[in-house]
Length: 138
Length: 68
Image (cartoon, rainbow over all chains, first blue to last red; front, side):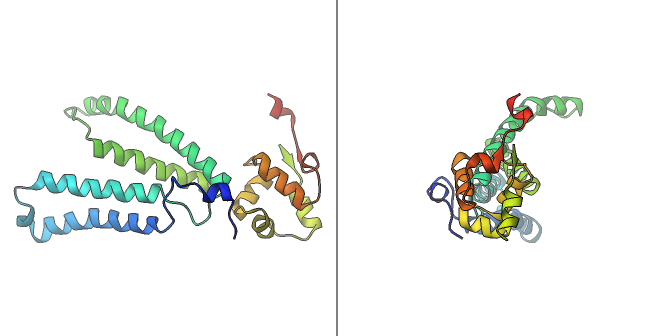
């Protein structure tokens, strides 16, 4: 099917096959640390912080590839859904940042600092979720 | 905004997929336009009108709540 030139020229998005690459990265970032932890925990002994950052970064990259790659068919409606999803995500992220410490306090947990990776994962995950939900409703 | 795409398609014995292929959008987009969940851009509205050999105003019609 021939797609609109304006949509095809949108260089901001990765090609569709990046979704598969992204899913692969997510799988690696989740499965590898778990298997290392249970099979050979001595490998990461003393370097937990380094590996934690490494795998979080791989997870963020995977989520980014999934979120920011084109669907099999992109048109003006999918672009509008993307814009709406970005808006919802921005709003949710602001509320998340404001209210998470409050929830920590209510649950009587110490208020912990939020890492950049944690926030970025939340943003990307919410964007993917909103996009999928809205596309299903369209 | 109301539209008569479904009627026009029926007159020409055209499926949603046929129309989608001819104007370069997905079948889901045509379905959303027909069920008034999505309002198409001017370019898309003009393309649809051209396919049915009509004017845009004959296909799309504003409703009372569009003026609110």
